[in-house]
Amino acid sequence: MKNILKIMNLNLYYDEFQALKDINIDIENNKVTALIGPSGCGKSTFLKCLNRMNDLIEICSIFGEIEYKEENIYKPNYDVINLRTKVGMVFQKPNPFPMSIFDNVAYGPRCQGIKEKKRLEEIVISSLKSAALYEEVKDRMKKSALSLSGGQQQRLCIARAIAMEPEVILMDEPTSSLDPIATLRIEELINELKKKYTIIIVTHSMQQAARISDNTAFFLMGELIEFNKTDKIFTTPLQQKTEDYITGRFG
Image (cartoon, rainbow, N blue to C red; front, side, top):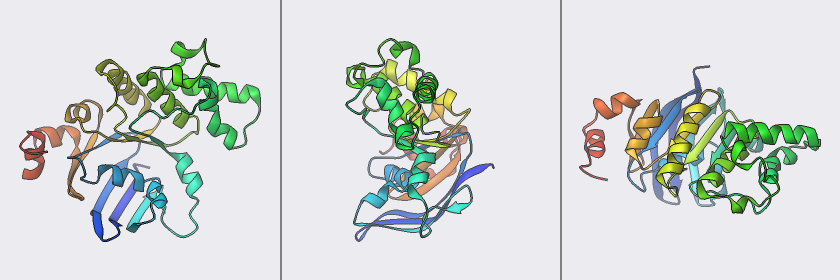
């Protein structure tokens, strides 16, 4: 399947305010798609539509369709819990649970009913290895996750998402609170992860989008202005607004 997600005529309102206007976009499988645009343009709102996180906001109403593997996730009786397992999320600020490193990663699988110690150990170790964190924490698995540095905590949160065996990982500015070295580690990790997962990342950094993504979507005031291969967006954008944004004329 070339496109794992297909978004059709997506409109989103917070009460009377329209935050997303007629969004149509296809997300390619095993690629990194970056969402760029100035603050308040709808990037994070759009991201949260993809695993129905906006359901938690009472004043939010959504129209249109989002197909995940050719099934509309907004149809009645759709299994939202399963969706959030398959479409995982990593937030802007690292948010490890106040428990051990091991228990952070084992939390999701335990909730899914996996109790066998050996199986949990396998999942935790392979998830930490996938998140490029295992070598740094293998001797202190019982220590609190809160003792890790910011960059390590973010990689732990990525490991926690991976442990649920998702197919898509949503990342909402995952490096915005990290220093340049930790940011580089996460970017290298994203490059590795796309071999197995589809990644959609909101980023304020156009340099980051240019470095790590295959495709880029430019949002402005709730509209999708342009969506294309990343190199095309940054070298030969089709829309004047895109060119103005990436050359720093506004934003």
